[in-house]
Image: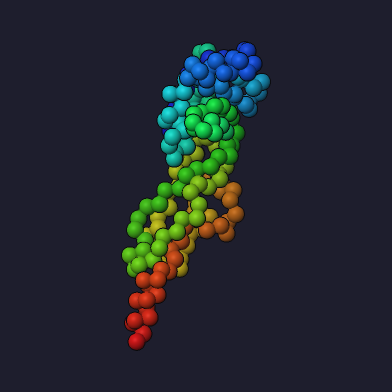
Length: 192
């Protein structure tokens, strides 16, 4: 999994006025939870979040606050309801000896046999919830859809990644190929 570095400055004053001044200065108020320490309140530049937030990928974050480094993941993010500017970010500390629970995006590879025959590829899930040690977390979960025929599907139980436990229900459909009107019409004309 890729790591992104974010530089931050500790916040001691947590009043609304201070938070408003930070946002006006294009800084984002943040909190780091987890680990053995108390929650760490800090701020970081709005521009620092671009490679972390505006991407379908999931990243580990190397957080540097006043010279101290911590490894974490993005836990929650709040946007302004009108302008979509980031208002607040929560991070969760991770350590190399404790498993992490996180949503990992799915990436489909290959060309489905069923789609070549006129079927429609239907993606039911875009991310899967997994639990793994930070060292085993993948950037994404690759699923080869080449063998999928019309009416076929791939479920959570059909996917395996070394060192990763899937937390979604095993029977959940991730992707499938459904029949389209064109296929039904073609089959009907073959029978005549």
